Length: 331
Image 1 (cartoon, rainbow, N blue to C red):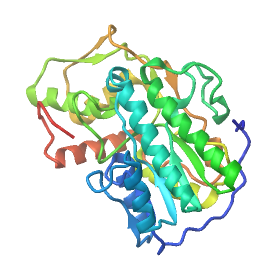
Image 2 (image 1 turned 90 degrees about the horizontal axis):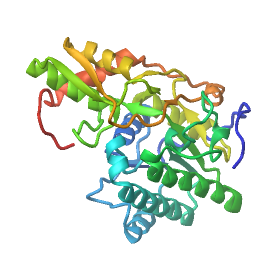
Image 3 (image 1 turned 90 degrees about the vertical axis):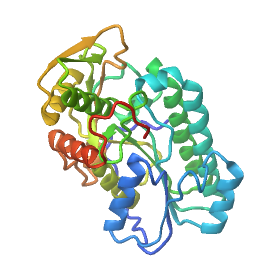
Image 4 (image 1 turned 60 degrees about the vertical axis):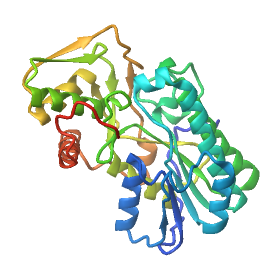
């Protein structure tokens, strides 16, 4: 694994706005944001079959789809994702589904010699006790967080496959490691969502029901970094057109806050005025996770959406979809 703490050299791979570009995972949180951004940037031949049309776990179907559609660039945003409970209780699905998705798409892209491919990993690939802020060079230097190690291993395998293709075939494929993401299109499921959408759902429900208190998982002391998915979408295009290295590159804000502070912010946005309590019998996960974003900053990208404003717009999207106050929901 190549150490990565130096400033990257800016390269130029201007994408043809009229060429077919495959956004794998087009209907998910990340894929839908990438689709919106590329559309706004003038891309006219975007390809984004849904899972009912193309199951990326089906190797033959993926190869047939590539042969028929011949994408010239690929953004691999498709993945099985979930919060701490989902990762901890269903690690088999997280490693199996993600490995199959990645291997099928990457192998098909290689067969058709796709020139530009961006593989999106996750900041959970880094060691649990990595020095903060986390540099790209920390990868594979220590044990992973046990509550999401299966998902992390799958993503690490994707990074290594991208590096292997670069080394063996010379294709300028790249990998990016986003921090915790949120925004419109997120999953607000009661059991399977990540922390921020889970808090939005919980506080909204408590607000509607006029609950006296909200009990949250863990101690509230872990520190996390959050990036609006629209900022990530901008970063994806920047990386495809300006970055060319075998090292993965971090995408985040470089700023973090405690989960307790995050919960208080969400409560303020929602308008909940009851008590906030914590259940220390539930897992906290990694104590702290904030990324060093100096390398992508050197490429000219910076996040634009502040956390409070981003939560407010995400909550407005949540309300606009009629989710407010629902006791059960399938996303």
